[in-house]
Length: 119
Image (cartoon, rainbow, N blue to C red; front, side, top):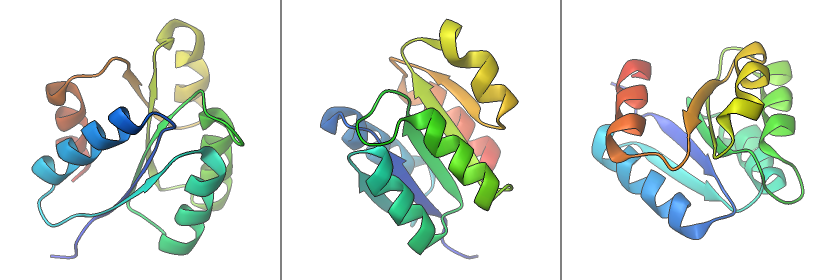
């Protein structure tokens, strides 16, 4: 079976590390890349062509909504999980653009459940 490629994009180091840990545990053998902002994430996505992207909304250089729009224009079938502390503000837009909403703070169980569905 082909190893899953995952890109995690969040400007908060602790959130990146938490997501990395949950992905490693949920998808053993996955190749995981971590980005600190939307622009760095976009560059990784363009070069790596991952299977799944996990992104925050509020980040420098390119926010998660812009990143989601770029992803869906270029890779319409790419699975994108969008984490936000303000789900009531962003939920409709995230879903409309084809992303999956992950309210923050997220738990091990909530992210793992989404990742297992996307296997």
